[in-house]
Length: 200
Length: 380
Image (cartoon, rainbow over all chains, first blue to last red; front, side):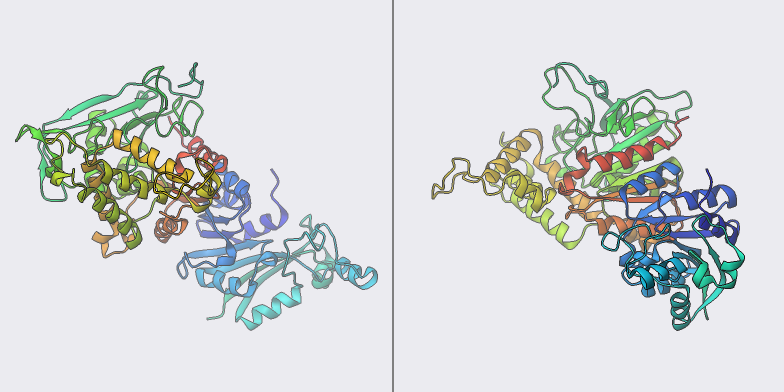
């Protein structure tokens, strides 16, 4: 099975034998891939019943968790990486959770759909409607995304929270990148991927 | 009993008894049992290298009859029929399942109703108060007797889950998987309070005779009934009781008296009465004490994480949303202690209205989680 592009990219950022916490781990694809390819250990946190079953089937450790309740079950610096793919925009208090991620983990990896993508801007500006795209497929009243942001928004929040951006990648939904994305990431990037660290 | 045994039933079963009289079993209370019997049932077949054995630990008022029927006239199957059988979560096509009746029980293992060899009278209240630790020790001896040096898994719900947890702590090398369902790492003050009311109901029954009721040919029926009624309420949830009974009246009208009027009253009395027929009051007292005393962290500076530092098993922990006797938060305490130690653990919180008793019921997500986990356990 081919790995989702953002997951493939993230895998490359994670060193072998590390201990990883995956927030909103879905069906456990990333953790299973990391386990098989990089001998990574760790846990996935998930709230959806079917996803929990898939994780158990895959043989990864999954903990039923509501991310909106924070990460109080986890000790400071108990993971090498805390990963959250495509979930931060669904969280009640993304800023709090970001802080929690970097309390629990040495590094954080976050991916989200970029609301500053030109198609989103185009929808709002010309059509006057909330954007619907490959990265944001739901209508405004159905979407789970309650805290969408742009690359700039996210980076400003990191600055405010004393979070250092160690690495950034910008891709489209097929996880390809291009010269335009590299030149104007906040306009051409559909999905943003960040590797973060707390400034000591 | 159904006319034809369903294909996912273990079928007709018999129990076996083994007498342990070579080495006395020293107990936490300081006393010891020089000889004792354990009654148990087994389902499935033990494989050649004895590596597919699963130990089932029972809860407060259950016993060794976990699955199947004794005969074709049997009204009810074993207490965990929903989870044990061919193709069920604890798949008897793959696993060899052992379920003993705990020491102190009243279903065939040595307990208060057994004859004390020193007095030739029933032990009654003189039967030593046991702990979960003592039970685990006696179960380990049963394992030795059966030639099982390592259980593939130790599994239990409620008080049974506590035994599974104790197993992982006491004998880390002797189990590979540990499944803890609807349990807690220790009782809260509220839990102990409920147990104390239940005990007081029994102890103050005029027929209790300080526990020597056997000699008087009576049973502290009212006390045991009250204890069971109270317990039963705590096993159900508000929603479940509302759904099942509401405010339904048995005769459709109020009678302005103290006889049974509401259906829920009738149900509780019926449950209590049938319990009295099958359960012993002294055993009930013992079992509630074992629950109250259970606190594996106590020996480790009250730190559960330290207590679980050396466990080697892989864990599955399951809780139910409407269980207020041992709520999900209590299961999470176990999970957290395992996470602190970077142990292998998965945890599922199952949405259910069935309260604490949910672990006995065929709730689809629960069964699916349990079955998927068990299927991943290699049995060869």
